[in-house]
Length: 210
Image (cartoon, rainbow, N blue to C red):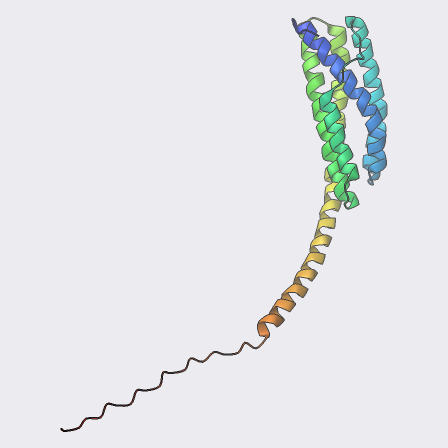
């Protein structure tokens, strides 16, 4: 699509968001399954239904604008979802992985907030008040989802991940003490002294008369 007007930009951004939401509906169940925090799991599950409704609004907007919703792939969302998949595949403690999953999820929310915010502004400038209202509703939902993720992180997940870290450091300290003890024992091994020998004194020269 050529970008010859603000309406063209709005249309392209709306199609990009539709692709993003479509990808997210497939990713959220995997994200929910991978989390251990009940609150985080519930947040992902709840947002799945919200995301489906958001995709429906975008279809409605595309219909009003006379454009096809499908046919464009949001490369940014694809990359963000891949980052989340990497977190799922990583080894680690439950709370630490949940903390990393929240980071991945908030990156997604911030991308969507930027997209919906821009589209809302474009629609307002173009006088598309009905479209603007639909976008404003979704924007508010994304902001609320981001706040909920922050609340979960600050209320439970971050503290639990920190306690896991403290526990790991305790094990590291024990290992360090053993190694230190071995080093101390090595230091206590008797080191043979090296004594420098004094050079032998030269015999005094004999003096005599001729």
